[in-house]
Length: 156
Image (cartoon, rainbow, N blue to C red; front, side, top):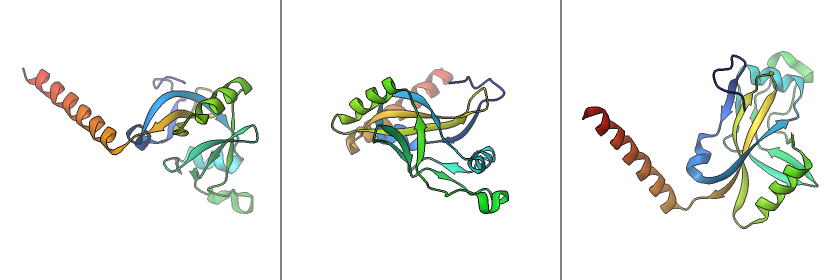
């Protein structure tokens, strides 16, 4: 992934809820197949990946339910906003992902969509396991405790 100091690096959409709802075991950068109007719409920052997920079907990796707003200037040549989009990944990585989600409770969650240093749209997906309510409370308690520690260290 490109560094944030890179002038071409730009986050398009981020799934902040994913780290709260899931334990992220590993992540992977993948390419995404888009039409021209989708890329134009992404450049204006009109997208949402919070409700989307990735799935392996027929030996291919797909992004399902990701929202990319319609590009008004495209007119008739526009795109469907919530269509399934193919994700580009090597066969070796696809096999690893297939094996990972084969375990009980595992899923593929999109974490960040961004333009890399070459101006290409990339998606970072995570192999994740859902959290229980108690786990979410524990995460919130740890976060609050860390904030409180930082506050105390600043004061004294």
